[in-house]
Image (tube, rainbow, N blue to C red; front, side):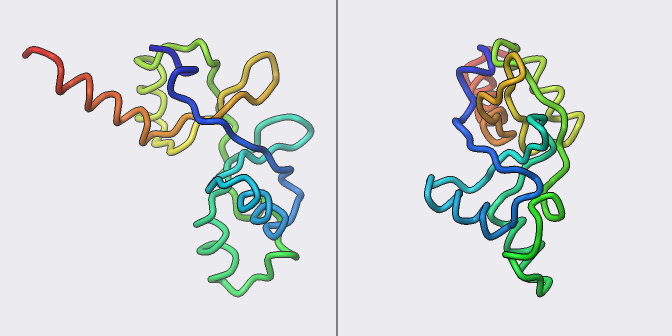
Length: 129
């Protein structure tokens, strides 16, 4: 099974954009995470809980805080044709929750640890020991 079969569609936001702008993009697209980029390169991932717990709960003002200040720095990416056996080790070893999927310099989607662990659980349930 390849990453392309498990990845979620995703949206990106510039790391210099405000948390307020990122929140509106999430709301408008019905997602809870965005890939943060800078100059076309992946810089990290910001989630709705990063915004609430990292920005607003600390008393910061969302329209004055940058995404880059509150995102999870994550420059590691994976190709859509990578096999999940190899990628699962990357996610586990790196203790990653999210792994942006990039092909030819273009953001294609996002792979989550939750999705990988779900597949591993399924494979274990169907395997004969």
